[in-house]
Image (cartoon, rainbow, N blue to C red; front, side):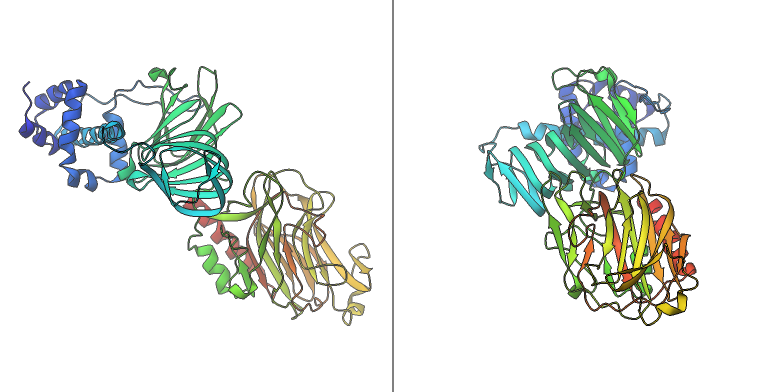
Amino acid sequence: MPVDDELIDRMLSGELSDEEATAFEQWLKNPANLQRFALRAELHSDLRQSLRRRQIQTNALEASNAASEIIPGSTKQNHQPSLIRSPRRVLAIAAGLVTAACLLFAFLQPHRDDQSTSEDRVAASVVRNVGGLLTKGDQQWDDPQLPMGDYELRKGLLNLRFGGGVMVYMEAPARFDAVSDRRVVLHSGRLSATVPPEGIGFTVETPEAEVIDFGTEFSIDVEGGASEVHVFDGLVRVNPGASNQRDASKSVDLHASEAVRISGGAPDLVGISVETNRFIRNFDEPRLNYARAIKRLSPVVYYRMPIRDRGLVSEPPEYSGVVLTGDGKRPAHAKGVFAGGSLRVGVDSIGRGGRVDSPPAFNTGHFSLTVFVYLEAPAHSAMVATNRDGDRGNFSLSLNKNGTLQTTIVMDEAMTPAITTVVDKATSHLTTGLVTTSTTGNSALPQKTWRHIVVTADGEQLQIYEDGRLVASTACTEMASSDSETVWFGTDAKATQVWDGRIDEVALFNRALNGAEISTLYRTAQEEIARLR
């Protein structure tokens, strides 16, 4: 069938008959013809821009001739394009071919001859650098533009923008090669990418696979001779094998909530569970219903634990603190319970907790603390939050020696005789002249799970709530006053009770929240988590 520009334009507009569309698909099998179509398709950018992302993803798949495979460990199977024709089908073919042609056109761009060298061509630009140390050729790289070349992120976090508006988030340690503004080779480390429709075709290569995006949000972890690909939204195609050993028949398509592991030398991909808590996918703390719900309860201070290189930010800002750091290979921030970041303490990170030297006073006799905690590994005697240091301060929340949550307050000495007949001697005792009382949860804290914890002291009961449920209660009097004593998160004053995981969304109150308020907070949090996954 002779093909001219008029026929291509009719194809792009979805005006071909079923017979013409079939013949046109055969004509496109010639790479030279496909390139000609790609160039013509660039003139029809209005059509491409009008397509919604989901439509682009579906049509791009239908236009692909890659072999179908069943993902290991999954019931999903990829499908070849249907042969049934209809006017809507013809338009779908047109849209799919536009996408395929644009992908080809984008891939061809880096190979065009020009007068600039690879060192001159910019592959990406730095959007945000959070405590990052980026090197190129063993020299620190501070320029906001990244030319093509090899880089190593030795510490901190980096947000890069590639071609087509692709946003990439990297966590140290990581080593990568910016091949072009559409392609990255990740030799080791963690990378997350958010790809808009304009960035379709963005490709990440690892030692074990090639990952081609079709408009999505995904993360890749390369470590220990294996690559993992986790898809949170949209669609990616995974071509397993080293660059010179890939077998197209083993390619798989991953949709949202699917993940695979590719081991070096292994013949097949292995389906695994997608991990929503491992990767930092955004540096910003979004405006959330949970945050609004907290603020409606009028906390004295609220720490959202955002990813910042300026310290531990609070609302109001006068109660901000510092992030404590030490030895380790990963940053002091990790993904938060919702989105954005959390304070990462221990594990394999440089994070050693947080310290606030000028916190608000807690002197009303009543108190509440709300917090999300995430335990990475079994831990004992690990601190969540406290302002106690010897005979100073008046509250703490920690894991006891059995790995169970325990909260302790210092009571007002003038009030303690009133409870001597009802408080169990095992939970109320004298310490360095102070009368304290503690209450303990009924089970060990689970690992790798966010848990919503609330502590309240209302002058009568000291209580712990876990995920909206009251789990422990002990009689108490009013809490002793404490005027602006240093507050620690994830550690104690002597740095001996270090947390091993993450801490997020900490709010402190000079009043006791009631059960209805706590239930509402937890329900709001669950709705937020479900919405953002």
